Image (cartoon, rainbow, N blue to C red; front, top):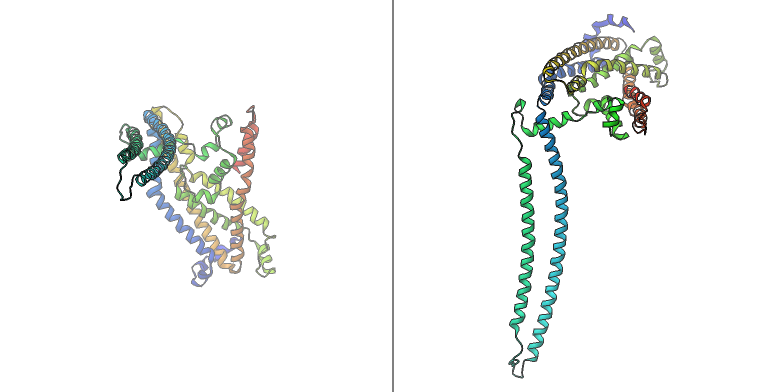
Amino acid sequence: MNLNVLKCYKLIFNLESFKHNYSNMIMIIIIIIFIFSFFFFYCKDYFNLKKILNIIVYFQLNPNLVKIFLNQKKRENKTHLKKIKNIAVVNNHKIKNKSKIIIFNRVKKANLKSLNKKISNVKLKNKDIFGESYNKFANPNKKKKKIGKIINNIMNFNNIVSSKEAIFNKKNFSNKLKNKIIKKLIYPYNMKENQMCEIFFKVNANSDSELNELDYNSSVKTDKRTYFQYYLSLLRTKHLLIFSFWPSFDYNSQIIKIFLFFFEFALSFIVNALFFNDDTMHKIYEDKGSFDFIYNIPQILFSSLISGFTDSLIKELALTDSNLISLKQKTENNNINIKKKKILKVIKIKIALFFIITLLLLIAFWFYLACFCAVYINTQMPLINDTLISFCTSMITPFLIYILPGIFRLCALKAKKKDKKFLFKFSKILQWF
């Protein structure tokens, strides 16, 4: 560390050096994001976390409501399958009816043509020299009656088809009404029944972190994911960019997740700056300011490892999913409210420590980087290049690292004798990295 640069703090407030101090501007933007995320969390996200906490307790205190929602879901699935089957039946019925009508129309046209020919032949035979008909046996009224019967048959056939379709629509309408009839209850936060049902299925479903943290025996029973699904779950929970900006119901504050992305960039920035000593600056002078990637590889790797380790410690304070998931475990009704109060206290303490520690760290980062870049103006661009490369490597490496855990995990879960606990534990160790 070049602690001597801290003596030159007056350069930070000089307008001329401020214009060319890029790290100063970057850190001020990150501090503004921190202030915005702090107020947004305490105005909105904290209330949402508290709301989810109370809803989890509400469902545990009302097991009958859970049964109602589960039965409703089963009915909806059954009706959905019935609709698909009925639509297929109706389409087949319509196709058959259309083919029958087409055949019937063809027969009718053929009969009409044959009748017209016969009538014309009869007229020609029964005409004399003067144009008067004298055949007593030619009776066109009989032919007209036959045509009238054919038309009546067609009309009756169309009426039968339309009546069947009307009966089918009435049955579907009655089924819809039956499915909508559910006991009306007063829900918390003045929520509607549809909203409560949606939250129930979100809470009732296992999140990615829950499935990934299961033990071997429970994973064999419940975890039926494919390799690709497990790989995506690791990216959603571990990859910083996806974890921060991919909206998901994971019992964490979305604004804190977004802020963690910018905090890790600031952490990578300061770690790279701490590695800039006299040797590295002399190397920059020899290279005339050009960036030597091979020379900076050890610095990039060490800075990415140190920033990643520090960021994982900060995440322990920032994330609340483990606390809320622990409340989902079945407990007695008398103890659940006590457990809820304890978890709420823990969340308050964790979040308060997170904001205090990150604020102090950001101020320290800003002060050191601003002083360093004010003194060493020409080293700013190499420092920014090192920071961007190390930060980008930390974004790319998870795509490769998380290929391995799924291989060992699936081999352990798909074993016939179910005796591959060692492989499963090894996959969880790789998963942690």
